Image 1 (spheres, chains in turn green, purple):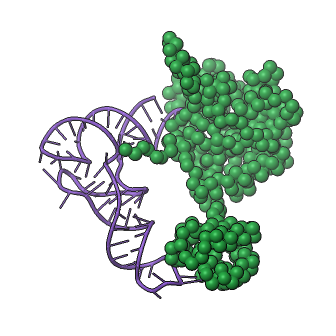
Image 2 (cartoon, protein in one colour; image 1 turned 45 degrees about the horizontal axis):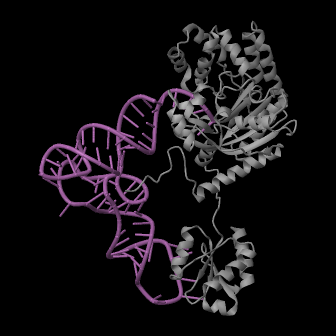
Image 3 (cartoon, chains in turn blue, orange; image 1 turned 30 degrees about the vertical axis):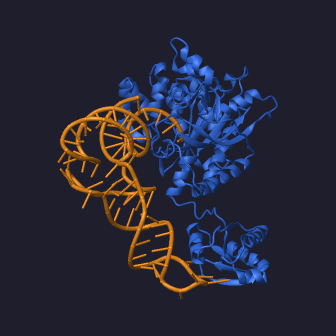
Length: 454
RNA sequence: GAGAGAGUAGCACAAUGGCAGUGCACUAGACUGUGGAUCUAGCUGUUGCGGGUUCGACUCCCGUCUCUCUCCCCA
């Protein structure tokens, strides 16, 4: 009787080759984020359920991984009459990195006035995973708290764009919209306020399902066909308009709605401010962008690539979230890169090149050499700065070479009785077959030369 | 949460009610201080699990678990 040894669906084991790519990518992201002045933060994998509930909308609440009460507390809870799912859990795995940031901010008195933090950690969602989707996945967030200045928007967009540029992904766009603007559009279409949420979810799909698909989607959600048609007309961007021309078009259509003035002005300002940042050339006004999470209040963004349907990351302004933890309202804006999707695109395009993980050298030994001598030789090579693995047994030397090949080690250092007696080491380039016997110190130098050349 | 399909060796797959197999991988050997190619030999299974039908079940039926795909939602 054997038990299932594959990890739970939607989770993965990361083998050494996987980690080489992941760490490389993480390194680029950290470096770029730090170049924009962001500082690192880490928070616990699980939070009090009360911290998480009610921040993401109903759908989000359902997708929270909950942790049951422990021991006696669980037994007592189970005995309560009319016990429900909600009574059995008091902790949940974090669902994103933004809510934990808001909690930390509310809990910590002496953070800088403008707290610019980055955070690369896994999050969990109790979803059924599809292609490129997981129940445990890494998010790479940057956020700026404490300012309503659109400089913050421009900076988070710029940092994200710089990551994509560094990775050689230049065919991305950053779609830009505004939560308040969406409200006005829905109002202008003549939809009742209570259909706002359902309409937002529908229009977010326009680029995926097309106009006819959207009409069906409206019908399925009980949205009045005439209002739906009006909304479609409002959000659909004509071909060939510049970003400011698209804003002019929207301003014209929303002239009768005073509430539209501010969001339109903010988007216009943001375009102007970002013109001087890395994000400038990539910004694209898109009135169909909605984003699922409930806490956004102002500008919202999403990175997309032609390579992949769906987004590579997203973010926006959330001026109300921190206030849910703390009396005073604290404005904030953030952006998150979808690490797993980015990895997928990088792999599909072969953008990783050679990322090496393993040792440089395999130390091989003949049976007439004592293990202590092999370890001594290995230690000398390591002190010279090489990554060295010692073959633990003494089969035929050819077997040892074959093992080196199998773990992609390029060089062998060979220690036999002859070398040991003379204080020498034979080194072999397994790619070219070149082999020489040198005094140990020189062998180390030559190996370094080889590994740097390759 | 809804619908469809699939589970056989470490991996990829055969076996359409009659001895559970092939390839790759793995191990050993083909001049005992030199690998990759080739050849030879060998190892690998409670056919996801439980029950039923049958003289006989990988195969048919029921249940269950897991995985994949499509919805839903999302990064």
